[in-house]
Length: 306
Ligand SMILES: [Zn+2]
Image (cartoon, rainbow, N blue to C red; front, side, top):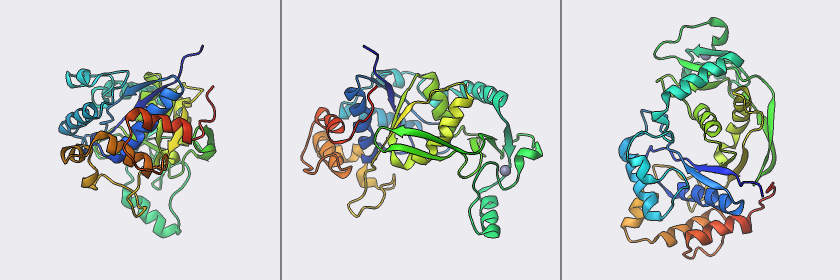
């Protein structure tokens, strides 16, 4: 029997854990259980301005209160000090990965601000799309200094994948310019860290919200340039929406898991509400985490289990 996939639950501690995270957890553990795989817990705190240690501690507490334990690492291990599963502890790894990437393609400093893209859009009547950036920084050979971003030239064209929930998908690799690997504040970016981490952690199944499917082609290409010919499999699941259908955001204070539990809601009630709001079940009745994750296998087409 072949080993099941390795997937991950990878929240960013930019606020409290909310119902959207819970939906993701149900799908992550749902796929892992369905396919006989394992779940890693990763703290995606690459953005040093928005992430805070107190949010990470609250997040670990919330996971414990919900009874959600990853196969690796434990919340206790994460609380006890530096970890290979916390991005802010892994700066040298990302620096080494950039060096490796620079042997495969151009990695260049870019001084385009958001306003540079806006000005280009005004002048051209459409947003910048395709490789490069409006300032043509790749050709300029700017010296990297504070305040400048770092971009990687991933090339043109599309990448395709067979999504476990959406079916065959494809999209442009450089839809809105070359991929930033480091932002103007000196933070490694989500789109870079996630590929480096999935590679080094042996993650071969990425389960995440549909709002991230547009980032997938660039991540497949980047992984290949970093020496990963076979990308992970992907499953992009529905998002939790507000009752009026609009997108849930971190500013929805009333959706914080900790606060909802504090006000007397049970975890089973929260699991029940989430499986209803992502369309896995219509009843909205309280369910256990086991029952919620089983719905992922029953109600969604888990298409390829090879
Ligand atoms: Zn630029």
